[in-house]
Image 1 (cartoon, rainbow, N blue to C red):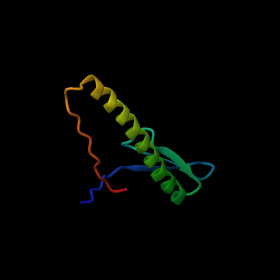
Image 2: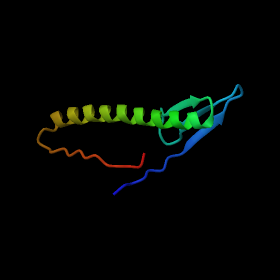
Image 3: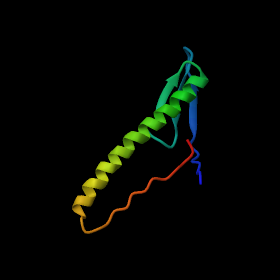
Image 4: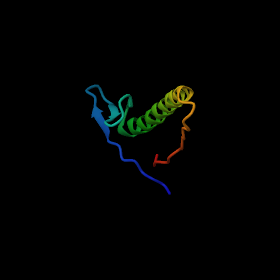
Length: 83
């Protein structure tokens, strides 16, 4: 089953040309492009990179917490969302 997550992409035209772009719901996901198509492509790449970094940070936090709570079983599971 494929699940889609809806996020809000914001594209701001720049005075000197091109666009800056960010995702409202995801602080830290921002980029720019010479045109709208490039800005959209760069935004999706930025989202993937931020999610990858956040995933690694979460794994480290889970490992740290599991060492402190060694008696409790911690379950991690990958979920799918449309990208």
